[in-house]
Amino acid sequence: TTPKIDEAHSQNAAGDDVEVHAAPSVATQNHQQQPTFNQHPAHQKHQSHQNHQYHAMAMSAPQASAPELPPKDSTVSQDHKVTTPKIDEVQSHNNTSVDVEVPAAPSVATQNHQPQSTSNQQPSHQTHQSQQNHHHAMATSAPQASAPGQTPKIDIPERPDHIAAAFERIKLQNAAAYDENPNTEGQGSLVPDRSDEHSTVAPPPVLLRPNQTPWQSWESFRGYPFKEVPLATTDIPSNEVYNDASNVIASGRRKALLIGINYAESPAPLQGCVNDAKNIKNLLIENGFTDDPTHMVMLTDEEQNSKYLPTKANIRRGFQWLTQGVSEGDVLFLHFSGHGSQVSDEAGMEEDGLNETILPMDYQKGQITDDMIWSSVVYPLPSGVKLTVVMDCCHSGTGLDLPFDYEPYTGRWVEETNPAHSKGHVVLFASCEDAETSADAIGKYQAGGAMTQSFILAYKENPMPKYPEFMAAIHGHLIDRHFKQRPQLTSSQELDTKNSRFSLIEGIQPNKNRTIGRIQRKKIRPGSTGDRRNFLFR
Figure 1: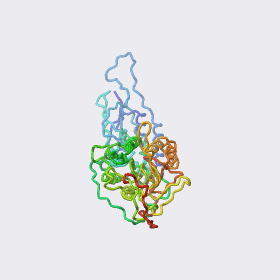
Figure 2: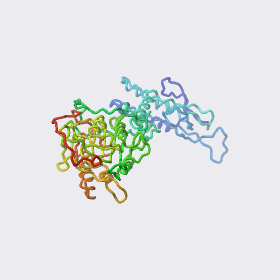
Figure 3: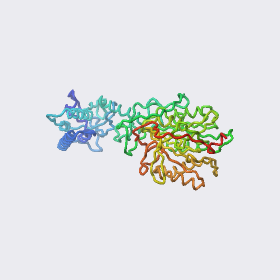
Figure 4: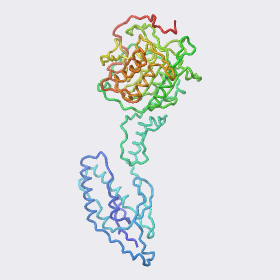
């Protein structure tokens, strides 16, 4: 018959008597302490002392004498059959029953494994000891088998309430950090596989934003009346101004607005602007952007659906959609390929006396000025949100009214005379200076804007360049193709160009501006467009 332990006492709070079928080696394995994290030094010392006691007692326990087996060829009755010891995937911390076949062990092994009581324990030690007792009870409590060789059932206790609550909090935090919002659209789950709840792999470092606003689909977004930011400034608290070059951790949320207009029915049609929008779309998808109406909208004049035509109303609504619900760590992209122009600046803010503009498909209803774009997509952004803009059009050098212009020959930023500061991280890659025109190139395989093609080529060659290196690469591709236009870089933040790197999805800088809003240091006389006026209006 199978030997059994005589009235072994498990370490549970009730002190119930149980009969356990377990060999000394199995009992010792089950007594291995669960790993604990962030322990106080006193806890670690206490843990080490207990481990020493357990191992010493386990080694000193006498081994049970195995029952003598009859010769292999002899006749054995059913009462003398001995089952092979085996444990079939006993899982701790799970409210399930598992089948275990365990040979018996003498009672002295279990008795020697009783942890020694310690006096004058701190409350945290007592709590830790109680948790160890719980693990010990699960490892040693087993009912007696009903017959020799029959597999007993072990009912493992439920996970303690405080541990279960901790796991639930971790799950909710991970859902908020990686899946954006549990009740909204996702980018495709970025959450690591948590099916094994005992995994010791730490979650990636992300900023948790439980109050993140869900993004609306383009199909359901209605927009709101445009309101230009007045000429005024606001001081930013010192604790919200960051002078170092540390990056904000990306949230994983990405949104893009792409606009390509060929003006097929106009006096000055273009050929490659729709292709530019499509090529930029492919580049963004390759770099982790999602192609759906919640994360990417492309407006072209080849569309049949009126919601996706680049009219003035749709473009302005697109600006509002792009910035809707954004929060720290989000990454945005805006691309425009089409006609650009200039109009007189009656407010006296522009250094050349002219406002830069982009022309919608229905340009007869009015142009969209840089003041409108700044008020719609630059000023509303909170700190820690990155917006990358590529403007492939004429007169686009300061097309967003960003306050800092990069000078490639000196490697320094120059602030505008009348700057317009904001909290977001916005960079504009413009195809030319304000007084220049931008080429619509005819390539070997397709037509396209020279700036857009050079931008894509430079980024594919080096997807994490420093800003001066990236600008030099773009300009180099333009020179190689004999284009005279000079690309421009402007920024809402005074970036550290020696160390900061450009990326479509990372490299987010926090706000460094102590004051936001428009500052008029000098009233500038309105300029005249003269011969530089776009020939669409001649």
